[in-house]
Length: 190
Picture 1 (spheres, rainbow, N blue to C red):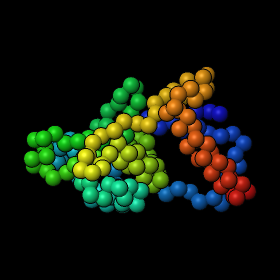
Picture 2: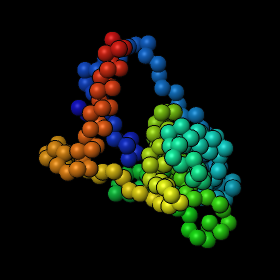
Picture 3: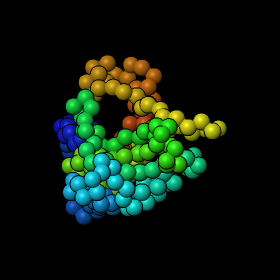
């Protein structure tokens, strides 16, 4: 397998997987990614775009009905930055008390316009990014908080030692299901 890095999302190309020549191409993201000049015109670090808010709100409604009563604001951030030498495509944050005084939201999810533009996400990839950021939200019985990732690992760690801890075992089961679905779709297309 050959690996390609795109932002902080690593994709793996599978050799020998045949695609039908007439297979549909995934459409580009259905939202406008603001250019740097849009931020300069407004003299802002963050911008609200209706198409992003509508798209992300629809993803939230469809994939996270448990967050129905949670108020989430979706914004573009001029510069996504990087962490540990990986581009940050987005982030979910709780607003500080002073911000909450002015804006009635429980969480703010921003997408880094510069990094997302370089990533050139398809509609499905943008949906996955929004879903990922929504995954940081925990809301139950009046408690609303941020939560971390289900697992953290290096590919080389799993290749060398396997799924050696419980969070990796859980992730491995999810990856297996997805790989099986991928292989099933490939068989259906051939």
